Amino acid sequence: MGVAHREYFYIGGACVVGAVGLFYAVKWIQRRIRNYRHPFEHVGVVSELYVYPVKSCRGRQVQWMQCGKRGGCSGEMQDRHFLIINAQTKHFVTARTHPRIVLIDSDVRDNVLTLTTPENTPVRVDLEKVIADKKAVTAILHGDLKQTGLDCGEQIGEWLSKVLEVEQPLQLLYYKDGLYTERSCQRRSRWFFGLAPTQDDEIAFVDLAPYMAFSNESLNELNSRYDENSEKIITTRHFRPSIVVDKCPAFDEDLWMELKIGDAEFDCYKPCARGVMTTVDPSTGEKDPDVEPLQMLREYRLAPEGKMRTIYKQSPIFGVNMGLNKEGTIRVGDEVYARYKDEPF
Image (cartoon, rainbow, N blue to C red; front, top):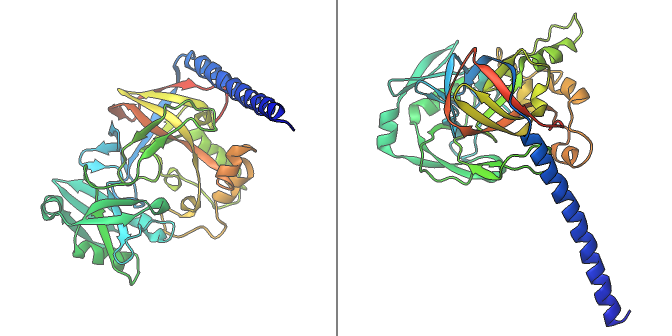
């Protein structure tokens, strides 16, 4: 092949690639314009709200929630602002490997964190002292990303080791703004039909997103699939949501693009993939021997075939991850409005 022919070949190939890229760009823009023309519609009401002060511990059901960029808070309880770690390896500890964590209840009042379980004497931590001591510890979270928190002291670490029945020493870390972190909430449109703006939000100790929501009917639909003689009852707490919406169809959240609740506005940017955490019974702290509800969800809630399935693999979808577009207060009973997408996910 001569030089001239090769040049024509390269130019032709570049034109084809450019044309394909332009085609998909135009389709994306058309979909974006079409979806944003959809008005907000009334979809239901808030039936439940939860704040999880300590990551993986029992959530606190609340009647109202102040929604900020890093998650919800109610009173002095801020969502996932405390993290349990292995004191030796500094790796974070969750119910995935230590399921009894879900039995630990937490409360924050008058700058004091209190942890309780049905079988143990409560332990308390003076948060003003924790801040004054400034004992910064860097933990290792998902993807070996590092994040620093303030050590809450030996007493609570020993208490956690006793409750979780482990020999290795544990520590509890307290999140404060300004400490070192390699983690963020990354909103991306990517491969699903969401049109989230490209944005990185600061987060405390959440896994992926500061908020997660689903329809109550999604849970009812899941439970309806079990045999009527089955003793399995899957509850809201199995899925650890921030917000539960009533009076809308099952899996309506698959189509949400944006939500308005009270004064707050949310960006529904990513379907929530589910894993082994859902198999931990929130009332017993034990993993389900039949790996439910994960096995049932895999029968009908896997991601669509294609790139999305390649990424999500065998992790079924239940709920939607959300970032915050506008801060505000939301309450149980508030009306919920959604801007819908034309296609799910």
